[in-house]
Image 1 (cartoon, helix red, strand yellow):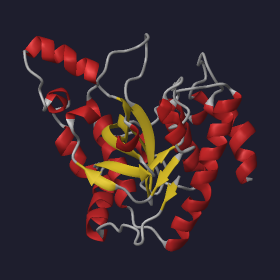
Image 2 (tube, rainbow, N blue to C red):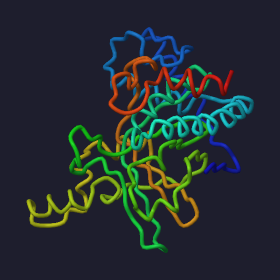
Image 3 (cartoon, rainbow, N blue to C red):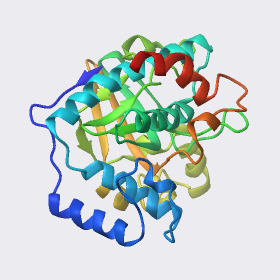
Image 4 (cartoon, rainbow, N blue to C red):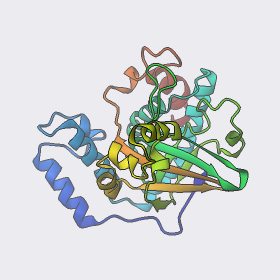
Length: 280
């Protein structure tokens, strides 16, 4: 699914210039992709959020946007094919971080996000989600969902149909991937961030159902959302809501992502075998 607005969003040049100047004053070379990797006195979390915001508001040309629109859907298709070949379901964190590193090599600015994603099809009576706050179904399970922001795309989700869906009827409504330039900003509700079974647990502890439980569990959510807002993407009868909770950028080179994973190949192997030939 690829959605395009009638008018691409533009950023404040003044805000960008100020942020860029602040980063350069801190010794960061902002001309380099993944400049969050550079040594800095800034706390890592702060630098990663500043990097994401820099990417978000960076001025773009029509030629650059055309380049992104050519590359990103094809990259999603290659990642999907690679994961299918490896029989790899789930893997949203690995996919988003791999893609972020790959996009660096393809000359495209991006950042990856970890948060909650919910799926609602009222006309079909279907509702489910990947919640940042839930009980783990198995050891080391990553809660929530991961996706990318690749301006002009507000959401790029290559693994939306690759999750461990089983026989869930929602699968017949899912697109192969999401690449949305247009999305409606939303205010996150507790049901976007906290699963019903987790809400039930707190209900039994508190003696009441707390409609602001998500703000108790994520006290910075509203502030974070001012810069990285939650959005809703429509796909026919299906509404997909993406609520960012944290910037989640790769901490290792592409070759090391999933290098020792129990499932699937490493980022470097997928790049060499599945992605690089497509763009050579």
